[in-house]
Image 1: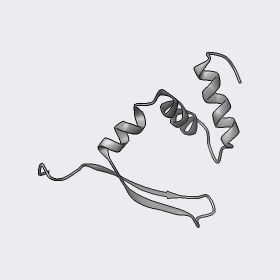
Image 2: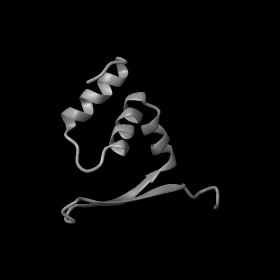
Image 3: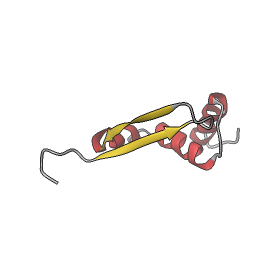
Image 4: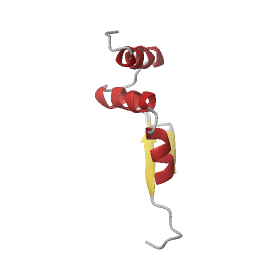
Length: 72
């Protein structure tokens, strides 16, 4: 890889109905920027541990519970 190339992560996220597609690339710098926030890492953790679609309210409640060291 030359010094002018930027490493990236490819995204191809298909919704369960198969219709919605997000395609693109995220630079390594962007990935590190996203992961520098503890709250964002907690949200990603919740999404990885949960199968299927999640309600935003459930995600927010769980992240808040982790931040406050309590249960939902």
